[in-house]
Length: 148
Image 1 (cartoon, rainbow, N blue to C red):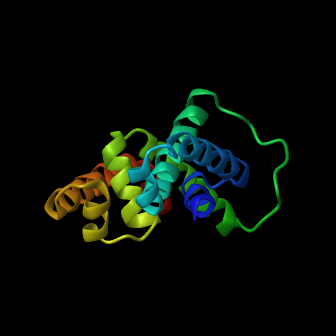
Image 2: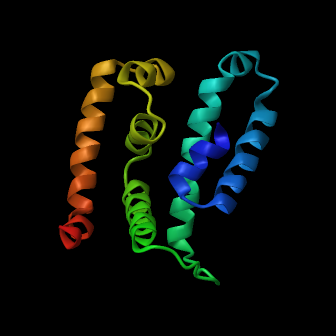
């Protein structure tokens, strides 16, 4: 679950493996807390989302260049480009908004599930999702405008 979540957000298997390792090291440090073990599933998912967003932010601060371009269809290239554009836009969001967006649209959780997981109201989740979608739409206008 942690690797899948990280891979969906980062779009890169190596980064997803780094996130997986980071999350489990954090969990290992928290094992002395008995409450943390009870909520292990939600902790792992949230930790994966947050660590993945940290990787994306770090990647922007220290850009890298792929050594080998894999031949692929134009559609695959467009999907990768869209994923990178979305990753950049997500990394510019407030951490809580990015986390809620990722849980809702990348992990597929309902607003109610997110509210319970984060200990906030369902209305706050819905408002945050709405505002985040508007902000992302605005930030991705350049990318989406070129495709229409």
